[in-house]
Length: 248
Figure (cartoon, rainbow, N blue to C red):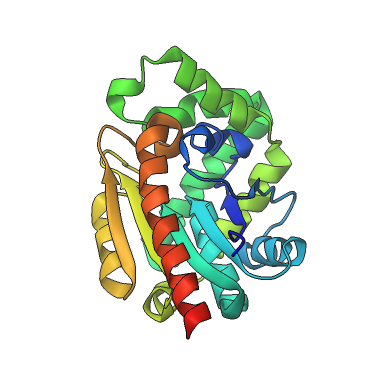
């Protein structure tokens, strides 16, 4: 049986570079495609783009905002998704009241920096909380992350911020998951902490939680080998599940 295609979904202001370090460490051979959200301004639109571009059944792995897109694709076409991997992400909608307003102001402040001083300047500030503190002196890693962000425009940043501020609650989708599910996070992820992923696992009946030591929010770039090993274990469970479905 031919391996199902693996669709890799990047997060906020990310592109192929967030997944590129992981790919050489994945075992076996399968078609792996990193998607681009373009100017989509909602998670639902991003999910529809993936479903429209990939016929038939697929496996979906998303990082950060990309994992929320994966859940939306599962919501739209559950019969086409044979496994999901959710990396360094969240599941709740934007809170009401002061907390939600504070989030909006924080995101818009970064957008203002990007518009007034350029995305690269914004990225240099933003990246400080994105990685394990011990890696902040890793010039090569930090430069790769900053350059990745800088390839996106401030207008794209605005669209993706709009998508995140209007994000739906993912609790219902986590509870409904009936396919092999990986939930993964960097142990030092300050943006999407471990407790958040533990709460997600508690809601998802088929989920396995993997924690990557010495990694922050950008775990696929910080610890690609360890992330690939976790993905390999998930992919093996997806293949076993698909074989069982065929036998039945």
